[in-house]
Amino acid sequence: MSAVNATTPILADDAALADARAFNRKLAWAPRFKMRHRFMPMLIQGLLRAGQLNANSRLRRCGIAVQSMMAQADGHQVPVRMLRGAQPVSAVVLDFHGGGWAIGNAAMDDDQNAAFIDDCGVAVVSVDYRLAPGTPLAGIMADCLAAARWLLAGGVPSLNGLPVFVVGESAGGHLAAATLLQLKAWPELFRRIHGAILYYGVYDLTGTPSVHNAPRETLVLDGPGMPEALRRLTPGLTDAARRTAPLSPLYGDLSGMPPAWMCAGTLDPLRDDSIAMAARWQEAAGCDMHLVPECPHGFIRFPTVLGRRAVGSSHAWLRAQLAGKLELTA
Figure 1 (cartoon, rainbow, N blue to C red):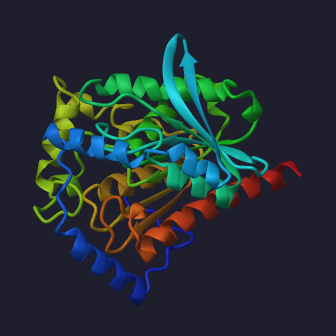
Figure 2 (cartoon, one colour):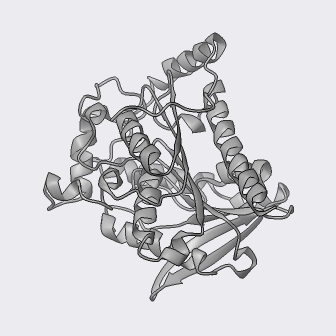
């Protein structure tokens, strides 16, 4: 599969590249995230929750209202977290947080979601799905599907009828793509999805070539341990079974998908996932793919010029999609 060229490239000038390299030198001293070690996800989850104390108050001081709700579809209940600014809402972002399926929660993306609200005039519904290893991947995916069905069927009456965009980062990119594939079984709901923003997602649970070739020096992630971590996520399955959709969205039927914006860093061992998925998505629905130099996994969260530019590009893409919808209805 050939890579898809971005229609609006993220500018990577000399100063931005030097900034990224300087940050990477610091990042090289940080521990790598190892899903295969049970203690590390537990430690990170504890630190995450400690850092979220007074999270609601911080958002409210910025003019963003927070509401905890319970999504439900066919008796399946899932907590969700809705953020909404003071301005009129033009669309809804359905957010699937990352964290290797093993850490994170619906408040994890508060800063990113607040930026979506400020820049794009949207409301955000973030899914608080259950986590591995306590919940198998099938259960995590079922949580995400139930939350999506609830929202799209009018679970928040004040948002009903607005265009919906799914957003996912890393494992959340996997869950967003898997949810879209499953939603095709409910065509009326699926038609409400107007786009997808997927930051360096995981689309092949057997591991793409860049995953299998990840060196020991991989930043952020435990490169050599990634294939085994993916296998542990789906115990008892053969690689052939892991390559079926929606478990591995790369092998799903992408016909009818909404347009998408994707990105990955050249230093990310998951980059081949995004490159291959973008090529397939382009054939089906159109995809704006950005391969960003000198950037590792998770780079949109780092205080670098290229991280900020990638976020800005995704927001600009969403605004352009909304402007196009308005032109069509004018």
